[in-house]
Each structure stands twice: as structure tokens, then as C-alpha cells.
Amino acid sequence: MSENHVTIYATTWCPYCINLKKRLDRTETPYELIDVELDAEAAAWVESVNDGNRIVPTVKYSDGTHATNPEASAVRRKLEELTA
Image (cartoon, rainbow, N blue to C red; front, side, top):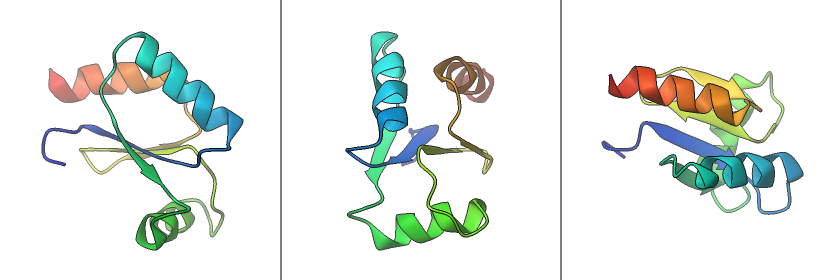
């Protein structure tokens, strides 16, 4: 994960996750994708930063910050900041 500045915690059925991935893919924004339904540790992390709720998409950035259900434009801005 050393080269991935953006990690998206998502599910395959979540419309917000699908929309975020589609918008990031359209601009070829790189990210790592983790399905919280297949990874219990990832699901626990998502719950830990969302007051015990498994809210997806939750995005973790390489600087340790995170965002819950962010707009694709906000993810792109944060990625620019991290790679500057």
C-alpha cells in the first residue's frame, strides 16, 4: 500500500460506492479498493471511524486522515495534496 494514497472501503452493492468509483475511474484517479464484506478487519476500521457504523464508502488517505462518503472531487483534491 506504500504507493496507494487513497484506499476506498466499500461494498459491491452500495450505490454511493459505485458512483464514487465510477467518477474516480473516469478521471483515472488511482485508489485501492477494499470490500468490507470480505475483510472483517477493514469493516472494523470503518466502524471505528464512523461511531460504530459501517458507513461506506469510507476513504482512508496515506496521511492517516479519512472521509466518509466524500465527493470524487474532494478525493482528487486530497490526492493532489498528498502527491505534491
